[in-house]
Amino acid sequence: MFQFTCHGQSHSLQPGQYFARPRELGFRDTPSGELLALVAEIEQGRPWRDAVAARYATGKKWLHRIVTDPSRTAFFNEVLPGGPGPVLDIGSGWGQTARPLAHERPVVALEPVAERLAFVRATARQEGVQERLAGLGADYLEVEFATRFAVICAIGVLEWVGAFQDAADPRQRQRDFLSKTRRELESGGALVLGIENRLGLKYLLGCPDDHIGVPHIACLPAELAARRWQETSRHALRSFTYSLVELDRLLRDTGFGQVEFFAAFPDYKLPERIINLADGGAALHEFLRSGALPPEHNGYDGSPLGQSLQAELAAQYHALAAAGVARHYVPSFFVRAR
Ligand SMILES: C[S@@+](CC[C@H](N)C(=O)[O-])C[C@H]1O[C@@H](n2cnc3c(N)ncnc32)[C@H](O)[C@@H]1O
Image (cartoon, rainbow, N blue to C red; front, top):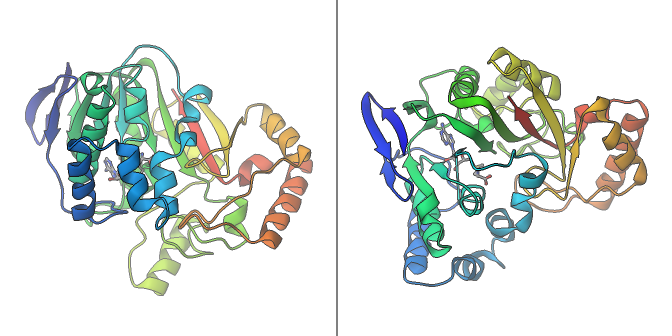
């Protein structure tokens, strides 16, 4: 049983149950009507992977991979603490983390966008894991859990929590988000993040940012990035990523005493290699010297990088490894914080 309050009202949620306070504004990579039509097909019995492939495998390959690629769960073995304790998956999206985890342990899938949560629910039912998965349709910052979790996952979420609202400073919302996860973990519990590195080498060399889709802005320090984005787009910048040093400091400032970083190549979304960055990145340096760098991609639309940029990345990583600083420039991080 999961206990929480939402806008002052107390609620409890059993595995298998759903509570929703859906919001209009939200992260969407698919029109809501299209996703609801897909959910209806799945509820009528079409295997969900077939339904997703029929719509996206040729026309929207990047989305198809983001939703179905087996690498989405590669961090389970390398980063996520095992055990039977309950997991809160914040920003569940299409259920890439919550659904597979519910095969093993109780999970609360928290996702503010109603049709995304409907997809998680329909696919969990089809995989027969609905009895271990509860769904909560709300913004994480609107909910207070009385339940304490063994693990809280936020994969591709921290960078977005300041967006889709105009009221609060986005970076303060990110700090509030992290402090709240710390409070809602049981003693010894771990927060697991997946997030791009603000200083990822590909961004410094001119690849578009994964969130705003243009180069040379989001990789700047936050205040300068916000100013440049305002000048360029006439919009406030609301998505922020961090360097290794910044994210480490942010986690420590919000109550985490032990913070472990992992590099994800080509990124945390579709990781082919996850490398523990302990010991100053010794394992990373060995990996980069081996020349086995997987091809990287444009993280905004999934398109491959040109050969010359790929060669440039390999050469520069080599130099950064030789200087002992490559961990600061990897494309994405997984982080385990306690
Ligand atoms: C880039 S998607 C990542 C989805 C999924 N975790 C994955 O790994 O593919 C970001 C998700 O975070 C959700 N999100 C954004 N702000 C949120 C908030 N304040 N509370 C809960 N979820 C949020 C969005 O609705 C969206 O589904």
